[in-house]
Structures are given as structure tokens and as C-alpha cells.
Length: 348
Image 1 (cartoon, rainbow, N blue to C red):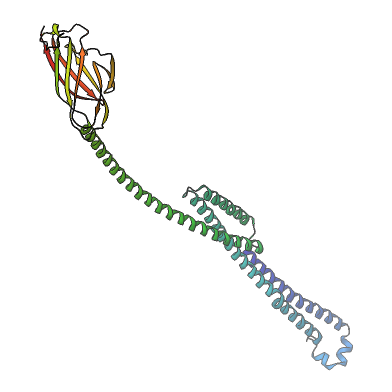
Image 2 (cartoon, rainbow, N blue to C red; image 1 turned 180 degrees about the vertical axis):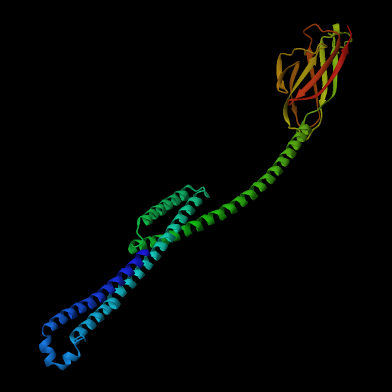
């Protein structure tokens, strides 16, 4: 604005110089005329009464010339200099507006760049993140172009303003898309939470049913387990008669019954009988069987046909070793279970 004031003063000074020049020119001519008039004063004064009377008044040609010069100076000021001053003021105002517009555009470009950067941190979609990064770079490039553009370059400013409008629309579309994705993600999260709760409840029900099934299975297994009843142990001598002394025992006869059980599986059943000596060792029968994850020696093995009804069973064991006096215990096994037993005492 100081330059503008200086220009106005300079213009006013030029106007004053024009007017002063006209007046000075007029004064110079008047002086020359006076000097010339003095040379012929004798004849002019004597022959012209008007000359004598008006010797101090400016002749009308010179007065007309002064007026013309003054009018020319005024016209030059009002029709040339004044419009130029007004035009300069208008240009200055337009330049200030353009600078403000450029600053506003710069702020908006910077805001767009920040929003793109913030949106990239709010999502986990790799494809969308790549698109946001690309748009952010485009905004940075346009911002750099704007900073390098003069405010007086109206065409370039207009182009960057159009680019700004395009970027604004693109940003709005990204905001809408991310908002939609966030709403969908929130909905899916809630649905997943409901599904997890339902799954947990179902898992609890399944666990409860499994426990019930296990209990039922155990109950069924127990109910289906064979049961050996009326177990009787008879020691016989060499004549097949009951023996009272251990030294007379030549054979053991073991009688029992497999009780009726409609829940038990029918078919061939393998019966294992262990006869335990007073020392706890089994009278050897020549083999082993599996029980409770270990192998046990059996004294007698016998296969029977079981149809679910009560079935009588008799097995024998011939003495092949020296027997000790004391208590002998009998254990009966079938289907991996101990199903019955008994014991007998012998004196020496």
C-alpha cells in the first residue's frame, strides 16, 4: 500500500508539473513579447491608443494558449492518469483476494492430506490402504504445485481449484466407504459375539450331554457286565472225592453260574479263572490275559456260549505242583471285568 501511495503522489506531481510547465511557458512568452514591444514603443505608443492604454494586459492569443494547455492537462489527468490509478488499485485488490484464495486452497489441501493419513490408521483392508496412500500422494503433489504457483496466475489457480473440488469428492467417497465398512464390521462383530455366545451355550449343552452319555455308557457297561454267582470251590483227591487236607488235593473243581442279563452282549464269552495260592501267586495255567491295562496269569481258560440267560459253568485245574496249606482264592474274569470269586482254606 506504501508503493500505491507513492505512485499516486508521483502521478499528482506529474499533473502539477504539466500545469506549471504551461504557466511557465506562458510567462516566458509574455516576457519575450514585453522585450520586443519595448523596442518599438515609440511608434506603437504614438499610433495606437489601445496599445497605450492596455500595455500591461496579456494578448488574447497567449491567453487562449494557456487555457488550452490547462484544459489538456486536466483532460490528461481525468481521462488517462486517474483511470490508471483506479485500475492499479483494482489490480492490487484482486491480487490480495487471489493470495487469500490461494492460502485457503493450501489449507484445504493440507486438511485432505491429514484426513487420508488418519483414515489409513482406522482400517485393516490392504487394498483400501493402498488406494488411500495413492490419493494422499496425489494431494501432496497438488499442494506442492500450488505452493510453486503465483497467485496472479489465474489459469493455474483455476486448474488447481478444479483439482481440489475433485479431491473433495473423492475424499467424500472414501469417507462413505470406510463408514460403511465400519458399520458392517460393527454388525459382524456383534453377530460374531452372538454366535460365540450361542456356540459357548451349545458347547456347554454338548458337554453336559457328553457327561450324561458317559454316565449312561458307564451305567450301560455296568448293567451289561456279566455276573458270576454261586461260586463254589471243591478240592478232590485222587479218587475224585472231596479232600480235607492239602496233601490229598489232586484237582480243583470250580462251579459258578453266569447270571441272566438281557443288556449283555450275547455270543461266545471267554472266561478266565485265577486260583491264587496263599502267597498271592496264581497257579500257573500257561497263559496271560489283559486286565486294567496289565497282563495277568490265568489258571483256567474256557469259552462258553452265552445267550443272555443264566448259564452254569464248571472248570477244573489239575494239581501239577506242591501246594501249601492256607487260604486259596478264586477270581473269575470275562469281557475285561472281574465278575466273581470265592475262597477256600486247607489244613496240612
